Picture 1: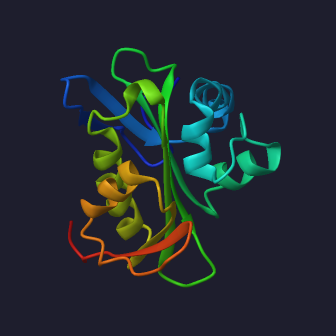
Picture 2 (picture 1 turned 90 degrees about the vertical axis):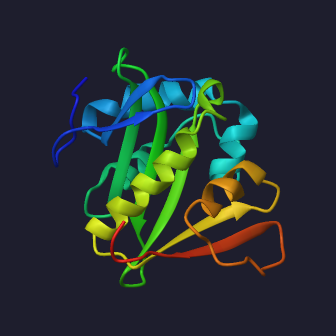
Length: 175
């Protein structure tokens, strides 16, 4: 598996337990490892990410997420085991100019180690690079871990009631 995506080198992240990870842009060869990531994630984690518990990506879903014209998908591995994807991050274009949609799926075993927060910060950098001034995220109101992750991006107070919150994250011009 490559150590860098189409646009360059991998982004290193060190987790709170000291584990070194590498985050890079997705390649067509990543479908199998991404499907394996989905199968290793609990139904609850998948439901929080997709608002359904689907066990893996459909072919149409993979085409959407892996198409650079639609946005940027990142995959994360540990530095030691680059053929096992432990997280997938998406910064997808929307129909609103300058607004990208952010989502992340972190394998259950790798949650609560600072990876989601670090990936959110990296996604904000990727969004700026891609010309976005705002990120949005559709977050289940009960997804407290993701709401904490988004707080790290200085999310304005969320006032939208309902089971799914539409979060808007203004991006500063410099990280």
